[in-house]
Length: 457
Image 1 (spheres, rainbow, N blue to C red):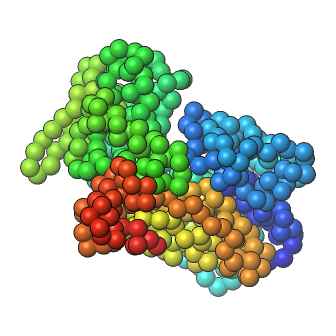
Image 2: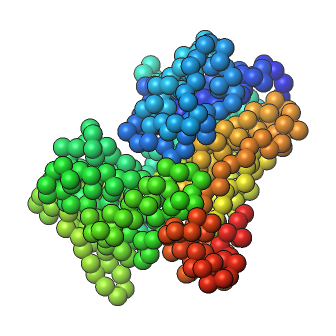
Image 3: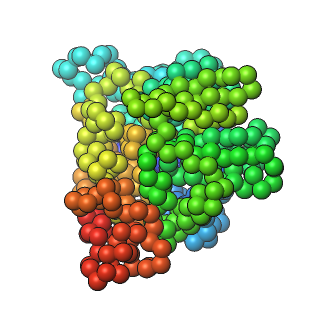
């Protein structure tokens, strides 16, 4: 493709707007379709949350080059923004830039994508046909044709359910008024809902431990507030992260502080709790976990489900796409991000080659490209769309080139060493050169380590 081609970008979040900036630099025309009333709609839902990475890891280079032409005041690179600050100081000025603003359509929810005149089955002449994007806004159904499509719509509005089998727990939908998903603002706008209540949080990721940490703070202010951690797995230490060895310092600090709260008994732990049903019993919720060997329950007032997200794929079903059957991400990306296999370290930077589909000109990008995997970093998405824009413009050399070096995470999902089941054990307690407890103990015994850090991808 050459200059003058139209690129439809689904999603007006950080990665979607970065894609638009890169497309503009390539002399192509972006059209951003954002389902929300404003750019950064999903990020506004967790505006109270501080990001684990500082500003320098959360701004795209093409976007900052564009902003610099308008006299924009760049934030201090080492400071940690909240979701609200990301929107106010970065996304809104970017969307308001004279070069980009005419290309953004808010309140425009995409409902379907196909090739003009071609259903999924028809092949001959398919590649030459433009994409046809249907979307809905306040004026009714609309139609847009484009030469390429970048789906950066994210996963925020498709949270995973409470059920341990990937399906909604029995009764989950009927108890929806007492269940929240993601990371509610328990110390701010949602305080009245949770103060003085028994609140269970299901999950083991950073959203779960961040919410539980905030609930522990709320318990200091509002007597009767009792946080309960429902953990599907049996080892809580895996949720504590890399501690002082995490190159994203704020994330390491959160894990260490959370571990201290659990150890002190300020957060009640229910491990091995695989939710099967949720029953409303008067003013209380009975959250049950049934297995072949036992039946358990937690009686609470509120349930927060922080079990991650999954991509919404219905509107791309008329396109020829291939996804990993487990992770629901592009096939070439799956081995790089699989949380079942990924070891300590970072995901290798990747771009158009890993994200391209059998439908030429269509790409997933951003959080949605990761499917159900939870390890996405903003910089990764920016590198994706830089490469994709180059690929769409026909600059293969730039599309293949890697222009990103990511910080090491210091977090071990699973070591590939033979003793993987005993690896990590949480962050190292004192040895700053050790990546986990097991590594620290091995080095204290005169060994080279547990092998965890050497198995980085």
